[in-house]
Length: 180
Image (cartoon, rainbow, N blue to C red; front, side, top):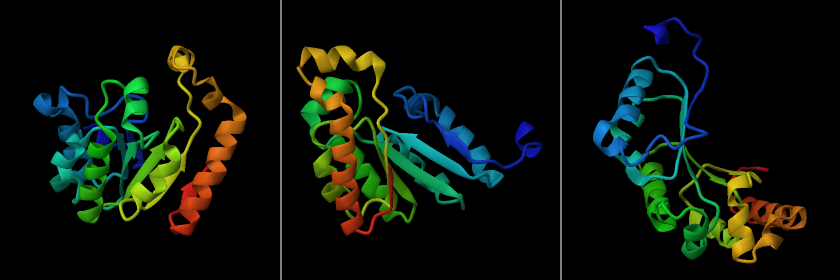
């Protein structure tokens, strides 16, 4: 009932907590929400780390103002395991991204946090994305990971600024819009 009374502002599903948690496979709460949003043609941005989003391509294709994106901070799965041990592999995200883009959906990647190995992402994203967003987004709860594995140099302003310059240049050559 509420959806019919509200102004159709873009709904971000979900910038803070992944909308495709493992339980989504069973309960389909995100899918049900997307069905309602699609029925009323609300503009939607989905951001996830989970390939489970491909399950909902049938609904997503019904949306006229849709963006579907993945958070990917590195191309190095061993680095991913340090910072996101329970998240899906980089390759599974890239495969899902390709499937979504191949289905004609507008896709993006948010490279955040920018981790070692991110410099190889533009080549892996070629033909799979409509835009890339770069964001520092260092996790405070990950401080111990940087310290434990002696990666503190990858939290500096110099590292971030250098990587943004590198990634932006690579993406520009590929004619992929990039938001720093």
